[in-house]
Length: 383
Image (cartoon, rainbow, N blue to C red; front, side, top):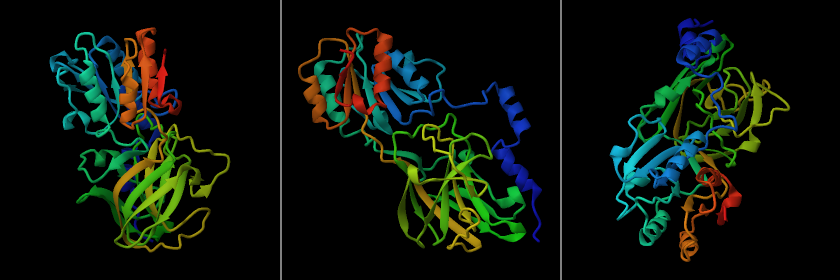
């Protein structure tokens, strides 16, 4: 029998806040709620550019976006007007409203855009039309959502992913994850000593959770060693809860794309399948990658070999997103004749909020809500 390492066990449960009393005290001292998800599901995903963010309605739009869990890039005419203290999920960029253009700084990572009327820095029809036309070249398709891009160095990797090996049940397997040259490397040594036989890396709970109800499943871009690995999706914030699993095979030294439909995930609790546990895709709390000698319900992994292993991960994404508006124009004047044709010419899903007859709070709410509504595509809302 190999020697079990209690220090590694404590490091694991400490990293994930899995000691109930201790983690509850930590949250209490920090003034945090025990439930970090929003009331109506996890956070909305994607970065939204708000043009005219300093206007009255623009400020309301930004507030609604932040409340709904979006990350926001606010375009304003003078950075000195930006608040001194702002939430972590908002940034400000300065623009010249007389010659507005979509610079790389402004558009990097943007998935959706909301254009707000601004009486003080009014967008002329020509500038508005140029902005609409240019957006078609800058907005990425909404059918794919990158959750982790390991091709880009990210100092937060070690603060997000941690090892969960069979040390938690007395085993001696050991693994970790680190950034390499354009990918993340999940590697280690898996051992069957002490009745063990699995190694894994898992994210800390997303705070708040992700709402991926608009997508069909999870896509992995990986290069492995010929072994069969598992992906786990978790919808509970607790440490020891149901995980939704899918096994996938790898090819030695060959990059492959794995698509895992949400409907194919198998609910698992402590290596056993469970019934009546539907997957709630509005509350994705964490992800996990695992190499195990077992499949499900004590069946053995036919591709498992103990010893050294390595799995390279280039990206993890949600795929199969539905068509929802990416370009939302809030219009406060009679509808310009050329606005709809110009929006149609972009081939982007769009919606128009006709705000002239609406309370501005309601107009802001409709604009933000439309970003997640397939039925809002091509519609003039609020008229």
